[in-house]
Structures are given as structure tokens and as C-alpha cells.
Amino acid sequence: MQFVDYDAECKVLSAMMHDDKACLEVVERLHDKDFTDPFTRNLFTLMSGLYIRGIKPTTAEIIKEGLTLGFISKLQDKETLQHIAKSYIDEENIHYWVDKVRRARKGRETQSLLRRYSALLQEQGKLDINQLVSDCSGDLFSLAMDADTEKIDTPEEIAELGIRLVNERVEQYRRMQEECKSLGHVPMEGLPTGIKTLDNKTLGMKPGDLVILGAQTGHGKTAFALSVAQASCVEEKNNILYVNTEMSRNQIAYRWGTILSGIELHRIRAGNLSNEEKAQVIESYDGLRRSGFYPASIPNLTPAKLDVLARKAKMQRDIKLLILDYVGRMEKIHPDLQEWQVLEQIIKSMKILAQNLEIACLILVQLNPDGSLQGAKRMENECDLMLKLIPVEPNDLPKLEEILKMRLEPGTNYRIYVNKARDAESGVTIPLVFDKARQRIRQAEELRDGWESYGKPVEVMA
Picture 1 (cartoon, rainbow, N blue to C red):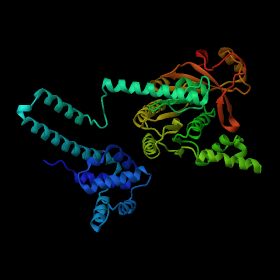
Picture 2 (cartoon, helix red, strand yellow):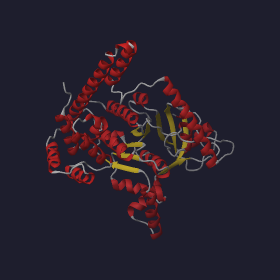
Picture 3 (tube, rainbow, N blue to C red):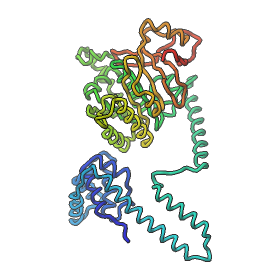
């Protein structure tokens, strides 16, 4: 019996030519060994290369690239390509055809295993039947589990990983201490938020982390998100994907102008700038141009669109962080679900996405007027770090100073409350200065000697 499904191979390749979602599905789940025909195998390799480089693998692009590589050299090659392109399927069926290709490959591998062990059974004089049964069952189990995508580690592998991580961590810490000579400075494991105390306590947003930031309407969610982006991709040069469901491209560009230049947003938008200020703003955009900031403004965002977008950005830009600003504007997965159920499902899918892509995800959510978050308990179960951005009224500042036992700089008007931290201390409050006119958020300065750190546990002010 031959386990070959040429028709399925053609259909998945045709789908790649017509649909972006199909490209992601095929590139992520299939390999060149899944294709039996030399032409379809080479075509898959060529198309995958185009897609990863950010080029849509249309027929025209394939022919152009194929001619350059010598892959398409005769009329018959073009005719075969045209035949495959006409095998178009609806992108919603792509999972079915990818599974058919994978099942055919698994059938071939099973045949190969059975032939190998059948040959070993003939060597009776050298045969260790117990070892053969053990090896055969292990190989068949790995095949059943898709060992190339799912793996059970051994104790030795985890121990070796731990040793390597500790050695790397100590060396990184010592190197950073030597380079910056900064007391109390802790090297990051993940990406920084730009809030020193938060970064020191959490060691940054690590691959697989899901971070939730809650704030009320008009109280700095986007400013915080762009502050994180500035720390992570402008200052540290990491690639990040920033998805906004509310603002246009123009609004995002204006915000960066004020963040980087320090000139008030309303003046930049009005054009009320002197020649010197205009030059200052324009020059400040050089920092953004050299950064790894990749934005997308999508008002009708769905979980499926976000998943495709994130996977494409990971594949093509090797992003380290996804920022979703904000989750409340995403379309419902199912019209009958309540809002908290929608949020819970989205948060769960984002956690899975963070783990699968090995990136950090920062999700912005809306707080109720009383500072609570509907469905918060369910969200807490999924996230690694839950933060609340809360305004501090002038009358409340003395109380905050008393609890933190520090005198804070004038202008301290917000605080971050660490509601949950999987790998750090929760119940911590960090005072902030939010300059709304310039859309800048930073940690508040202490004005009294004797206190070397912010961030005392403040349960009473949660």
C-alpha cells in the first residue's frame, strides 16, 4: 500500500498561493519531508522561503524566484505550477488538507518502521527481543505523539538546562554589574517595562508570560503600552508587535512624536510649533525609525485575526513581545457570550499564543469605575502578572507617602498596583508620574534619604 496523497499536496500549496491564513497553517505544520513529489517538495520550500521573507507567494512571484533558482526551467514546470494553482480550496478547509498530508507522511514512516523491525526479526542469532520490543514501542509512540512537535523531557535534560541557565544568568549579572557599575541594577530575563522597580522585581516580561494591565477609560492604558514599547524596542532594540483596536495610524504616529520629543501632544496635532520645535519633533522620529516597533491598527479585530497576525509577525519579524491595546474592543467569539466570558476566552487564547510562540504578551483591559475588573478571578488564573494603573488624587498622596514611608516628588499622580505576580511579590504599589500632555509615564522620584527602593506591599491600597 502506498501512502501518497498528491492531490492533498497540491491543494495545500494552492491554498498558500491564495490565502495568508493558509500560508501560516501550512508553514507551521508541514515540512519538506511531508511532500512526496519532488516538484511539490521544492515548491513548498520555495513558497515557505518567500512567505517568511514577507513576500506573498503568488504564481508570479514563484515563477520569478523559480527562474532565478533554476527550479522552473522548462515549459512543463510552468504548466505543473498552473495546474497546482487551480486546485484552490476554501481556506476554512485548510486544516483538513494539511491533516491529510500529515497522515500520508505518518503512514510512510510507519511502513518504514515496520520494515526495519521486520528485518531485525530475521536476525535471530543477534536478536535481543526485549530490547527490540522496547525500541519498537518507543518509536511507534513517538510517531503517534508527533515527536517533532510534542516532547517529554528527561530528568537529565531538565537538569542540564537548569545548570546552563544558572551559569548564563550569573555571567550575565556579573557582566552587567561590571559594565554599568550600578548598585541594585538587576539584569533582565525578559523585556523591560521601563518601570525600574517593576523590572527589578519581575526581571522583565519573559517568553511565554501573559501580562494584564487594567485601567479606567482615559487613565493611561495606551501611554503605558507605548512606554513599554519605548523601553523594549526603542531603547533595547527588540522587535515587538503593537496591535491597537481604537487609534488610527495617524494617532499612533502623533503619540510617538510627543513621547520622543517631549513636546505637548495637543501642540503637535495643532501644528503650533516653532521652526526649532518642528525640527526637534522630526529629529526625534529617528529613534522610532531605528526601532523594532511594528504597529497594526485593526478596529474589527477578532481572536482569529490576532492569532494569524501574531504568528506572521513572529515568523517574519521574530517579535519578542505582543501588545494588545485593548482587549475590550475585540469582536465577540460568539454573540451569546457575556462580556466577561469573551474576555476570559480571549485571555486564555493569548496565554496559549504566548507559550506557543515563546513571546511575552501584554494585554490592556478596562477597569470598572470602582477599580474592579469583571471576571478578574478567571483572568488571574491565566496570567503571570496582573497590574492595575490607578490615579492618585492630591488628597490621597500623603496617605500613599505614609504607607511607603517616603516623600514623593511633586506631580506624583498615579500608581501601579501589582495585583498578581507568579514569579515575584504581589500586593506591591509603585508610585508614578503620568505627564498626560506629553504621554509619558515614569517612576516617581523619592525626595528623602534613607529609602533605597520603592515598592512596599500595600494591601490596603489595592
